[in-house]
Each structure stands twice: as C-alpha cells, then as structure tokens.
Length: 147
Image 1 (cartoon, rainbow, N blue to C red):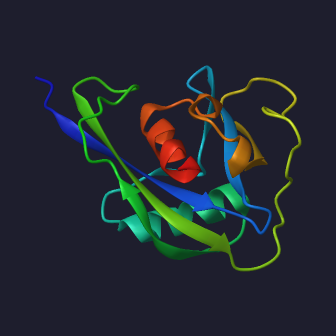
Image 2 (image 1 turned 90 degrees about the vertical axis):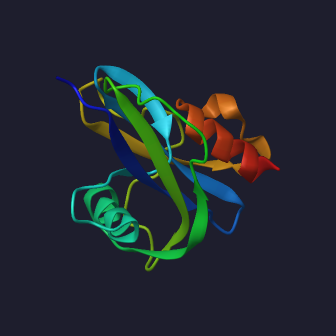
C-alpha cells in the first residue's frame, strides 16, 4: 500500500549587487533542469538548517539566511514521486565570504550530461522570465522576483 506523503525542498534566493539572481543548472534523473540552489529537507532537520547544509554541499561554503521569501501555498504534485505533494520553501540569502564556486557564463556548463552534474550562473532579474527555470513553483517565485 502506498501512502500519501510530503516532499519538502528548501531553496536560496541569492541576489548580487548587480541585481542578478543565482541559478543552478543541473543534470538529475536523466534530465536537464534549471532551478534555484537548494535541495531536499532531511528528517530531523529544520528548513534553515537544510539550506545551510545544502550550501556547504553545493557551494563548499556557508551562506547567511536573510529572510523567508515564499512557501508554496497551493497544491503541487511532486514530479518525481508518486502519491506525493511538493512543498518548497524559499529564503533570501547571501554568501558570508567571497564566492569560491565557478560562475558560468552559459547554461549547463559541464562536460557531459551525467547525473549529479551542476553549474551556477547569474541571471539579471531585469531579464529573468518564467521560462528560465524548469519547475512550476520556481516559475511562481520568478514571477514574484520580477514584479
């Protein structure tokens, strides 16, 4: 018997001094996707702790959480799981020290599509649109950022 469940994801909205937002281009589940940096909440972990852990895993450095930005307030079926509802939590955040990750100029700047491949790039908020991200909740957050 399969029971219904929640999948909780936590993301960082990092905006630099040039009014650009950080995007993550990834190859996961045999698919290319563009999203905000972050990942899945683990059992026993708070949302802020999740995002700080994800920052260490993805960037190799710490971030500071500035404020809560948005939490999903409607039903969204999880794309990669059966009988699951996705809840995404977004925080505005900033790097606590100079950025050490490689910042790419173009999307999907990795040698080949291997599950787990990831690259990061800045996108001007003035040029940002919903088509720049893959997932429905991220599209809503892009709409909020642009407006």
